[in-house]
Structure formats: structure tokens, C-alpha cells
Image (cartoon, rainbow, N blue to C red; front, side, top):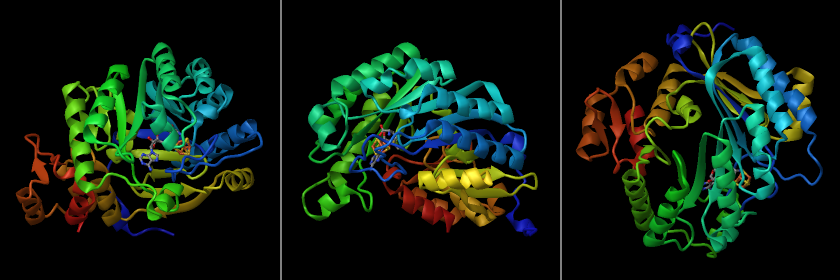
Length: 395
Ligand SMILES: C[S@@+](CC[C@H](N)C(=O)[O-])C[C@H]1O[C@@H](n2cnc3c(N)ncnc32)[C@H](O)[C@@H]1O
Ligand code: SF4
């Protein structure tokens, strides 16, 4: 059915960077705080079969959107470091068969920092991966145990050391605002982490997700995470310590030396185009008519596999994103960035300008600011209430 012209946004597709996200949905065990699409299997995963299904889904997506230059590829999970290097290589080959991979493409893979996985790093590098992101989470064994992690702190640091030798670019993740964690202890842990970091760190405040064991523990009064005031101090100290070390935030939870930002994540936050491949992957695809589609695939790995083998794709959602929806998404993504958003691009997408009265109101609270280059961004005081700021601007 032909969609109304209102759904179209005339941003030339060539101007919008294109990335490919590949989801590996398996983990060795399920962490009690995690609500990502990750599954534990007690039989060997049929990696060759998954590799063929990934290739089929890539082929179907390429047929739909046509030739594109891929600027970033990201293997996320789950635990993609459980993939065999051959599986990673097969996926990269399929991407290169159907699209043009830019010579300087960023190809990232999320890895859990156990010694077994670090042994595969060389293979991942040979397959074409040029950046790894390690889920270190904490630098002491008691905290790692409380988070249900399978690695020790020294094992994680050894994995970081291996990554440093093999990859030009690596990052690692830490989770803060953990039960019982105070500001001074976190600042000290963060300084130790920075000493091991190179160009990038992801620092996530622990969130208690619905239907996770952590939520049940919290409800039962057996797990106490820092309250809002301490969480706010933890956030502030994170910004200060990282900025002082030359790793300023470029997004709410991401810090990098200037120029070393994760380019794949920037594709999302700058509202680019991306294909979501694999179980439970989300995509945003542009068609030649200027329409933007939201896609999502079947989350259950075996059901996804069966659907791809029968139909060539695992899509369960494939919908036009209307212009008002695009405008909301653009704000939701772009205002996470310290570079903020370009109000003129908002106008192009939304078909209307941002409301100056609402901006003035948010400015009077110190939540947003205009930059000399004309962009609008959320301030440090605005970040803890980001959702409310976005809702207000989008209304
Ligand atoms: C999808 S995980 C994949 C990485 C890898 N499987 C691992 O756990 O090391 C990406 C990151 O999200 C973060 N994360 C997951 N659940 C979280 C939660 N409830 N609160 C804060 N951070 C979380 C962790 O830091 C994790 O490294
Ligand atoms: S290893 Fe990573 S993806 Fe898997 S359950 Fe733990 S946090 Fe989630």
C-alpha cells in the first residue's frame, strides 16, 4: 500500500551513515541484572547453521535496501565472544558480498573478559574485527560475584591486556551505583580503570530491570541500590574524573578521547540508518522514497532460525515510522550526546520547528543550552532528567 506523503523525509540516503548490527543471543550464564536478549543453552549451539541464517538475513536486507556503503559493523549480545572466529568471518564475508564495506570501517565485537574468550581475540582480528568492547563491570572480586559474573578482576585485566596487544582500539564497560557503593570507592575504582583504559570507556549506572532476579531481590528488601542523591553524586564524580583524565563524556554513559568515540553507536544517536541482523535485533531502514522503517526480528533464537530458514528473514516488526515518531526518536537519541542536536535537522524531520517557549522554559531550569554553533544540548544538570526533557521538547 502506498503510504501518505507525510511519512516521507527527504534526507538523501547517501548523507545518512549506514551501520550493521549483528546480535549473538547466547551467554554462558545469565547475569541477575541483565534484561538483554540473551539465552543459556546446555547443548552446543549450531554455529554453522546460525552463520548461514545470518548470511540469509543479510542477503534479504540488501535486496530490500540496495547497495550501501557500510561504515560500521557491531557484533553485540549476548556474548559474541562465544562465536567462533569462523562464524564472525562468515558474517563479515556476507556483509561484504552484498554491500561495500568502507576501507576504514569500524568493526566492533563485545567480549566477556574470561581467559577462554581472550584466546579467540587473535582469530577475531584475523576475521576482520578491529575493535573490542569488554564487559569488565567491576574491578574487585566481591563486586563481580555479587553481579553474578563468571570472571575475576585479574582475569578481566589480563583480557584487557590481550586486547591491547591485538587491537588498535578497545573499550571496556563498568557498572556503577552498585549495592553499597559509595562515592569515594567508585572514584578510586574509576581512576584505576582509567589507568588501564586506552581511548574509550562505557560507564553504566546499574538499573534494576523488570523481571530480573535483581528486581525480585530489591522488592524483597535484599538488595539496596544507592538512592537518587548518591546516584547523582556518582554520576557527577564520573563526569569529573573522566574529563580530568582526557576521557570526557560524549554520551550519557560513554566516554572517549576526542575522535575515539564508538562510531557505530554514533550511527544510532545521530539518527542514521542501520540494519539489525540476528535474533531480537532492531533496525531503522530508509527506502528510496525517503521513508524510514522500524524493524525488529524474532527474539527466540531457535524460532528466529526456523523463520529465517523458511522465509529468508526473521522480521516480526516492519513498520513505517511516521514523521512525528521520527521527530521523537531523533530527540531521544540525539539529546543523549554532548554534541546535542541540530534544530534545523529536527525541523526537516518533524516538518515543524522546536517550540521556542519550551526551549526557553528548559533553559530557565538550566536543563538545556544553545551552543555557539547553533546546536541545542542537554546540560550536566539536565542529564539525570533526560527523559523528562525529551518528553517536554517533543510534545
Ligand atoms: C548486552 S551487555 C553485553 C556485553 C557482555 N555480554 C558482557 O556482559 O560483558 C552490554 C553492557 O550492558 C551493561 N548492562 C547490562 N545490564 C545492565 C543493567 N541492568 N544496568 C547497567 N548496565 C547494564 C553491562 O555493562 C554490559 O557490559
Ligand atoms: S553476559 Fe552480558 S549479555 Fe549475557 S547475561 Fe550477562 S550482562 Fe547480559
